[in-house]
Image 1: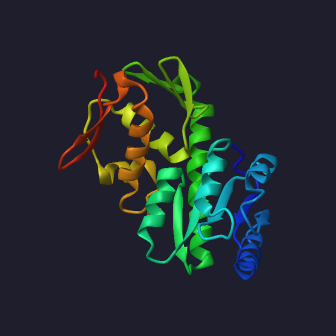
Image 2: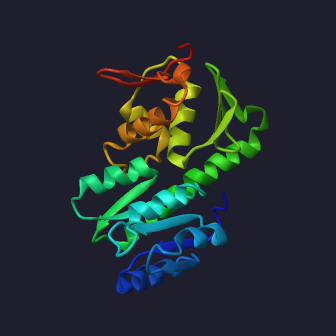
Length: 236
C-alpha cells in the first residue's frame, strides 16, 4: 500500500468537499474528490489512495454500499463520515471494513490527526516488514499470517484482511494462549494518541470470527475470556 498516495474524499456535500480539500492541501496532501459513489471503485483502483474519506449518507449508493464494493478490491484505510450520534452507522461501517469514523460536524484538525494516525500505523507495519524479513510470517495452530502481504493462509486458501483486522490478528497470534484485555488490544492495535470507538475491538473480533467460521477446524481460535478480553487459542 502506498502511504504517499493521494487522499480520496467521497461526499455529496460540495461545501464540505471544498473545505476539507483546501485544509488538507495546506498540509501537503494531494486530494481527489467525488460527489457520489458511482465511480468510487474505479477511482480507487486508478489512484491507489493512501486513505479514503467516505460519507455514509449520499443519494444513490450510500457509503455502506460503496465501502462493500471497495473492500472487494482494496484494503486502503477508510474513514467513514457519519451523522452525529448514529452509533448504528459506526458499528455497521466497522463491520464492513472501515478503519475509523468521524461524526459530522467535525473539526478539520481532528480529521488531519486521524489521517496521520492511520498513515503512521500503516507505515510502521510496512517498515517492520522490510526490516525483519525473517519474521514476515507468523504460524500458529495451523494458520499462517503473512506480515508483508497482510494476508492469512488457512487450509490452503489465502485471505486478504482489512488493515485493522490484520493488525488485531497479528497481535493475537503473536501472543498465543495469552488473555489480552480490551485496553491492551486497543494500545497494541491503535496508536496511543488515537481515540478509537469503545466497541471497535468487539466489532473487529466479530468480523474475524465470521471469516474463520468458514473453516470449522479454526472457527473457535479466538476465544472470549469473560471479564478480561480475548485470546488466540494455539491448539483448538
